[in-house]
Image (cartoon, rainbow, N blue to C red; front, side, top):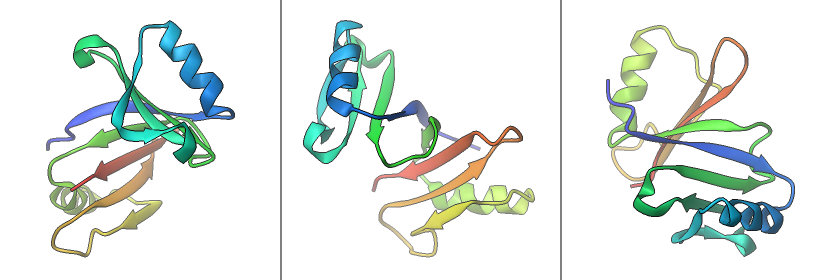
Length: 116
């Protein structure tokens, strides 16, 4: 099983204020991944040692997000292991973006998101 890279998707109330805060901690916005006007963005530290996502109004809670190279195969494997899903979109397609979400035993959201 390969979950791929992961990052914490933070549910923020004011994306501009959050961006400014994380910039002071050394993060910079990835110019190819959202922006303040889109109400979501990915921010990284130099060398990409640390990655966070800021999402205003998209998630009800902070969410751990995994970016595998084959979310469809992972979905099938997890389904075979008896896992239940909160949502799934694009999984039935043969290619292209897709995602699914589960929750851990404490109700924490876990998003698996394939961008291509």
